[in-house]
Amino acid sequence: MTSISHCDTADGKAGRCTIPSGCKKRLSPLRKSDRGLCIRSDEICCDVNDILTGVETDVKTGCGWRNGDDTQIRSNSDRTEFAEFPWIVAVLKVVPVNPEKPEGSKMYLYTCGGSVIHPRVVITTAHNVYQKNIKLRARAGEWNTTSEDEVLPYQDRNVERVIVHELFNTTRSNLFNDVALLVLDKPLDFVLNVKPICLPPAGRRVVDGTRCFSAGWGKKQFGKAGAYQTVLKKVEIPVIDRSKCQRELRKTRLGPLFRLHSSFMCAGGELNKDTCTGDGGSPLMCPVEGQVGRYTASGMVAWGLGCGDEVPAVYADVGALRPWIDSKMAELGFGQDTYTH
Image 1 (tube, rainbow, N blue to C red):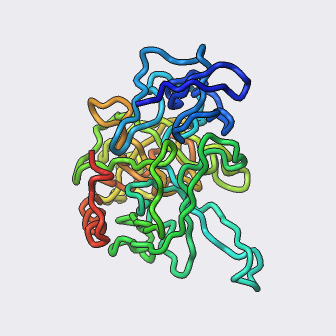
Image 2: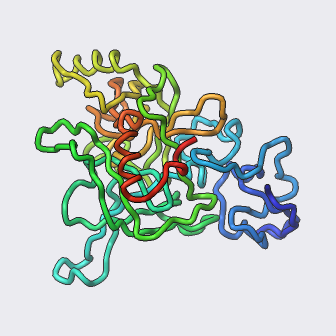
Image 3: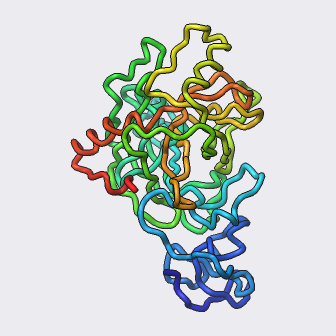
């Protein structure tokens, strides 16, 4: 439950401590100073005139809960709100600033997206992380990559192990079974901006036409003209039936004999609404039936033939890959409760 403590806002006004979804200011950028004198790290000091009434402000337990009231944050904007999708992870490659001094200062290069499913595990696509001898870092809770003036800081963890699906094979250029688990060196702390997403049950396919979200810091278009985003972006796209998707992809350079592998699913196909370069590994977040504001990572951005055109994009089908995920989690000694609803 939210506390009822009084506080002073950063502007010197009378306030009440509440989680961001209980404050109108949730719809605009938040600052660390808005935490005021609130004791709980997941609350902000909200002007008493901005307190939302009739809004469920309890902190929901379990995986997959989108922060904020779902009816309040719908807009035509492609920019997410702070901590809106608290499971999104930026996967970074760790490289030395000076290649001749590998033990010296390091820089962190954005590689792909991922999702928290356990305090020590991030799920992503294998094609982004299968290379040997690369050092990776997972950054959870990030939002605006150019600012540190946010309500809660991001959490960085080193990746101590990369587990790639045994049947993933880049040499055949097919990217089947495109899934990997990143095992972190230390557990993440689950707070407002860092929480796990649910995974769908094994074999569960999303109904054709279901509107889902994806989010990432990727480019909006291919090539040099495209630029990575500084603030986490989101896009709402429909799931496309597998047979329909295969028909559409056969009309492209893939040719009339193309077959969509069982480890893939499709979404998109709407003009100017798509995932793109750098979004690989980011989740396709589909709503849980009967639970408003709760989502499963039904897919992960895998590949496509363009950005924002009317050809569906292809995603790793997490439902099809769930048995492999569960088996690897069991081998690690981790349970399924953190990502099962």
